[in-house]
Image (cartoon, rainbow, N blue to C red; front, side, top):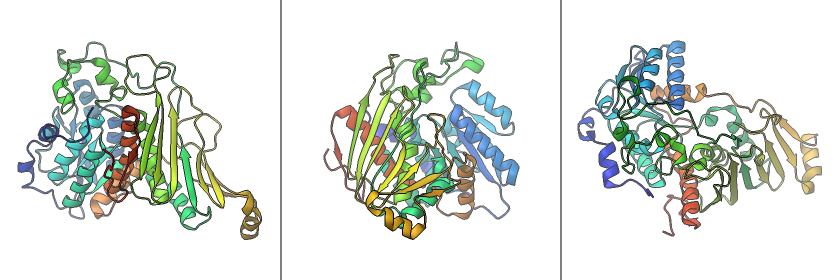
Length: 428
């Protein structure tokens, strides 16, 4: 089991950094375009490319100048969308360029930290898909590097750029709910064919020529070395070496907004529970999982999800005076209203609530899913302004504490105790 950045991990991913340190990035003028590169061009990376190209077409202040993927077919498909961008198989070669200002990363999780660190040390700003890193230790190193280099880093939790969670934070800060004591949420779905069992391209691999060629050694990078396995390559989220399963892929989208709404530190205690109850396809990660944590702000969090049942617990913020009910943000059953938030008073405070608001409950409109582009635009705006983005590295590090430690709790059968000011593990 990987437990953080090792000497070998770091050396592999950050090779050539000494040379890159000589150039700490271009200083953008008012009319300069931001030169962007996309590393990892699978499903999610293709969305990031689309977002960057949309920005380029809308405001003409971004240019996609480089594309990188270890699978030639994906690289070729992306090149049709960005024909002027130079193509790379190795990100190390791409990062040797001195004209790149921003790097968009959508690789498997085990490459997030090494590529991010190399980009930061080369003077680049970074948009990295969630999870921020593969492990908590890596997140601490990356967050420190962002502070040291004074670069912009945005973690790909799109909801943090929607009006939804900023409105919810305002409600919490106004004291409308009283003291929040518990929050809960879900990101659940039901795929009888096995979630993450994405298409495997026949014939693709390290021995294939042309479009089917995969640079397997480069893809493995700091992970355990093994013979090519198409299931691991095309369906990497099923395996611990490259993913934390439900926690890193899905729960990150729920935990991060709770951090924004409640403005808290690292958790003080984290547990993870679940199991591989239904899927029997060789995967290692559970198909049903719960992340549970207690926070120094004196509230508890529970995020419970399944890939074999779409009816997860409603998104709720529970206060001493009132409870806020929210619909699912992402996937889940049809019929749940995702565009409103309902604030309902607790029984002992109904009269007080009616007296103050002249109604039995408050309904907040327009707090639904606003898509991905706002988050991408926020990143590019911050690259130019040098302001903090909506999901910065420090917040990403705090989220990673709950995410990674819930995975370790499940795998090691223990509850973790944490220093909330630093995120340091106190019991092992």
